[in-house]
Length: 311
Image (cartoon, rainbow, N blue to C red; front, top):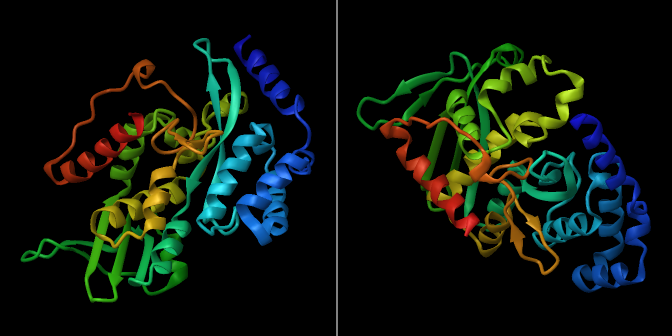
């Protein structure tokens, strides 16, 4: 019964509003876009309509929330094209206590390429990147410095065939300062399980192995399920830059609005710390998460950021 109610609600949300192209053609909307974007108004409108038309789930969203998210991306001079991966407009469902969907809005999620773009645009970075670490490439820590050591597989085909065991992000500034951060895949899964109410580590393997029944897939709408690697990349870059990088005004603004829904007055509302579906933290049961001393610094960073977003 609950599934049929959810399906009915989702259908009504998507059919009780005009096509997004019609929404964007309204005079008040055209004037708003013109004031916000200026001479790029036409190309902006074309790009956002294309992004929505290619995403059936996004078409169910409140159209004002889509426009607000896209305007934030435009303010950061980032493209809405999902192929470029600079930022994403991800649908999230607001539900009542019975689990019925009562509204769907677009959440602004900055992508890993968006973080890299903003960092390089600052003119302070010689290089910045994030990549998967494959089985056999991590060689432990240097006994004197404690820094992680890696030995990358030279053959690309051989490397691609190996399972991913972790993620590494690094940057080098123009002044010569370098920093590298490495998290194991298990640590990244623990992070998602801790900070994303819509993600469950216990269900992740079932999801990627196709063991979730089709009729229950709507429950797995977190971006951590749909694109774990992208979320891992962006999470590690975000942590790396926030802790040790040079942050421009643009970068600070991007971090402030990342993982939020932009309301009508332009203020971000944080529906979930890292992607997906709105959840009431007080109503979500979670097992206590044990962390090692080495993880304490990272844990404190994300905990403080989450606390700030909820205030």
